[in-house]
Length: 223
Ligand code: NI
Image (cartoon, rainbow, N blue to C red; front, side, top):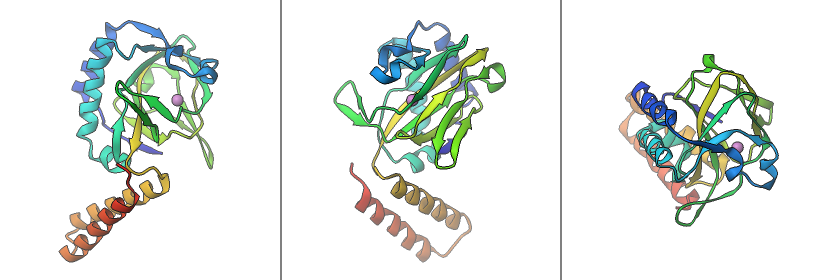
């Protein structure tokens, strides 16, 4: 589970909010599987809605420029962002995201799920994303523009929004590296290489570790 701060800056957030303000919201069960339809009670934008496509492009642009997202997700395929809205007690009960997601052309495997928070957390009550992990449930409620990245296989839910309105975008990522353990090790190695470079470590050592990184990625990736 990784918190990625500042995916959207103030200008991008304003642009997305402007678009969502004139969007037509539909029942969130439109894209839920049989089981999750019984616990999903929110609204969302139709994936083909031109406003959703426009807002989605803002998010995708921002992700493409975010080094922390690139290093941690090692994405080979990213779904179009799905914009959702919770208000008036809206909630999404316990579920696990589906493994395979349809794309306009073909399909993808969901290795990672991401929630991009769009509303100021002080402006609504509830609406925490609770993600089950080895140590119990983690509650996530982030500043507008921040994203949480987590394993698609983790059970999760959104607690009822009892006051105010919670807008968010969710998206799914197929990673070049399917194994979360291998992906985490590559991310750690990448971070260490960056730190050593920043500390002006000897070039030969940085080069050796960079080579190791790429050779591990060669072994473990499935483009
Ligand atoms: Ni989900």
